[in-house]
Length: 235
Length: 337
Image (cartoon, rainbow over all chains, first blue to last red; front, side, top):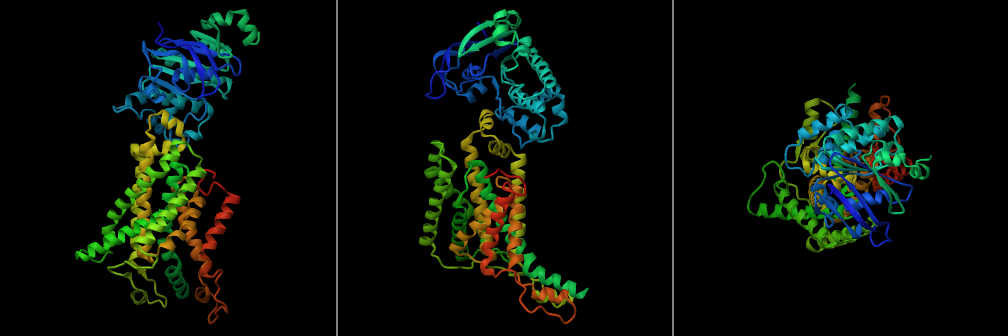
């Protein structure tokens, strides 16, 4: 029984055609689960389904054993889920510190401790906390985005292609940080284009094709699977 | 030296001092327009008439106060009535939001639809003001008229030219400054202000962060209504209140907001002064000014006026068109329209 599970999810955006068919995604605390697959496989859609951004008419989503299928995305944030969108995931006209403050907007308690923890995790953000997020480099922006999502002290962190558009060196650094976040006991679910590198750090991997689970295994096993290598990892 | 000082006093009297007051009034109006644009994402054409509505209410309360024998001594009584005018205008604007704009937000209408709805609201307010108040021009200033009179200035400095500072001009600048500082403090430091900036910057992410869109919209309307009333009353005190003039003010106000960079509060203020000084500078007759600066005994033959004051609206229009052609984001990089 996983901490977060989207089970047999079937559905699409609004009243449109189904994109997901019987798709199952699960992740446990302290674990990194990665969704990979070809373009248009429904990777991001599967994660958005878990976060409540599309209408499911089959299957269920459970967090810590409770059915959260009826909750809005905002309510899921309250329930302990953090989400980092792929695009426009920071407030560009606000400073780094204000971005983090906005992340903690729903919190009534004192969040300075959490902000210190985020600064420990991403030291560059502490240095640049008075700068506007729009002036930062792509990798630093992603750190702001992840930091913003961490401000609610989520139990699950969902990342939609966190390394899209950053250089390989920055990608490695971001993955290191994500591993550190997982070590704090947070469940991490992420969608990745860079399948090989992502599976390298993944405890669990989901290969989706056309909205269906094609392969599900540990990251290492998927990397070793000749069929997965041939079809999805370029040999 | 004497001549230069005379020229300076002359120019201050006819351009700089009135320009500062007019610029402050435009800036306050443009702040309201820019705020609604950045939160509700449409150009609110009803803003000029909202100013008229707020001014009308304030005049009504002023008359009640004067009837009771209450006055503010050397200051205009309208300043005492202003808070009540603001309250009434806020209530009215929230009502229009409830009855009109909220529906279009719910159906996620395009911003052009909201803008056209605001044109409708503009005509309605226009009608209400004309029915309740009439189209006539009225002055509602009372109290001390001048801070420095032209003659006192001449005696004080020994110059030939007088520099008069009317109390309404000083009040305008001081009130505008206080309001702007309060607004910037609110937007930069307060929790709600930050939520508003976040909502304006990235609506989806703000919603994800738990910002309540209804509250943000409501606060935006409250601030816009307050700014409109303050701008309208200050303009009316400084010049006079005539509903049609307020409708015409829409053009320089929009020009200010766009020149400064729409959606950017600092831009709205800068734009207000740019438009005000352009209007006054271009329509001022420089004959005597140049006579002081030129060789002794020389006086220009013509008035040395670039444009007749009748064309002052053309000035904001030309600046507006130029900015949209050359730098559509405005001086301070607002959103591209």
